[in-house]
Length: 332
Image (cartoon, rainbow, N blue to C red):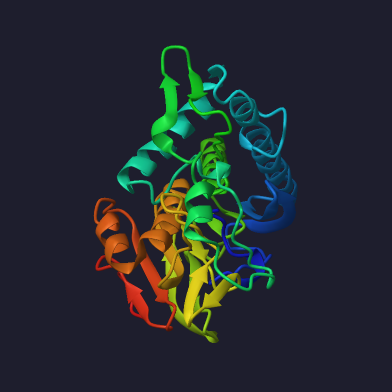
């Protein structure tokens, strides 16, 4: 159950975004819409309003295209077809879907199942709506992840097929899809010569270029325990930032806080951290890392991040303590 915290309560905020003219007659236009089951904020800097609005339309069309390919809640998507044929037969998919699955499996391997693209088959036995009065039994927890296991995903690169070995298995891109979409849209805009913008998919941000005033985009990190205070302001030109967190949805048993983010390898909720923000060049990877670090915890998470030297992070523990990776370059 590797979901992200809701958009309105993200620990990220974007500063200094306004719609005005620059010395080079560049203008900024923004639009908010619902896509991929969440909120997207699209900001484009262009030479005039018409160009900006046209390119926002193209971004929306591209995100919609990706959603129709990979959304497991759409019964006619390629990913849904793969899931519906689990234990039956391989399904041929577009190369784009195949390669996204390849990368997801690689991340699953690197994290030893702390991230698992087959988490979608997990039974939802944990409830975070206030209805739980006791922990599920150890037997129920074990059973909840019986169909989860990236090692049972068979890929055929020649035929471009995906086969899930166990009936009832499912793959899902809830933890990667929005980051992937924002990266794809950024690349599309850069290829078209659009100088700057931000694609923000429920807090998975891909940025490029600079604001109309020549300044970099500025991302503020706040502490959910002290929302009135900004921990750091991080300038981004071409980069990405994502946050995973649990401070809205959790339960407490015997004084211990259990996150709504579930470890797919064990079926138990993540504990120890309430949010992780990851910075790097790619939102898809940053998203997978922020989720993985939540599951793995501070010590193992920081060790994992060392394998990705282009990425840095800020963690906030359940007790409010703030931890940063050694390569996070900004003062907290």
